[in-house]
Length: 252
Ligand SMILES: C[S@@+](CC[C@H](N)C(=O)[O-])C[C@H]1O[C@@H](n2cnc3c(N)ncnc32)[C@H](O)[C@@H]1O
Image (cartoon, rainbow, N blue to C red; front, side):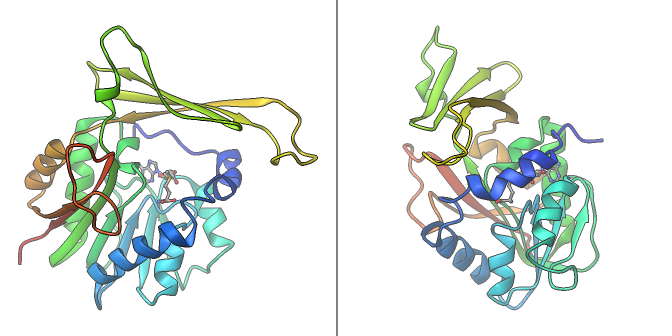
């Protein structure tokens, strides 16, 4: 049993259309290059592979990729792009599901560790990554830094996008370390016939964590921090960075 919300068929069918920026060559090029270098001649395991936004191009680059994914609807969208022999996916929880074989790389991108809503499950996720890694292998996480510097006392929400077709803001439970992202999105295509002027309301719950807490989880799982950068191009991580890409290594 997982605390993660199950992604619906509706969300899965919409996912790729909403990810034009994160699926652009400008984003995916450096992402795939970073991961391919770490995978080397070995195999890669993507936790929460979704529709294969990253896993499919990494496979196309020649890295054998295997996925674990909770939502069969998200996996079904991936399956329209690539067959099971080329990119096998197991339906299950990334904190507990075990797949055969050893890996030089396990990765979990796009803030998705935060979909596990308890600390215990996030620790189990690190343990599960370590379980799949060969000695010397790496676990990579991409995660936003909690935006609490933008939440002054007395304010309940932090906006993260105010654009023509989308309003997004986060609210916080500071005691439980839970962030809820709220979205109001214009229905239909931009200015096209499908634009009926209505807005759809969605929200998603996340357990936010600081980099230092993740380092402790990694240590509990027997992994050592090797590198932390601010983006897939390797920019330095500073106190103003909005996200981090962290690499932990399983000792040889
Ligand atoms: C933001 S999407 C990321 C998908 C893909 N990795 C990408 O970068 O586009 C989050 C994905 O995590 C999956 N997910 C959430 N909780 C999960 C869990 N406990 N185990 C496995 N997958 C999970 C969701 O079903 C969804 O496909």
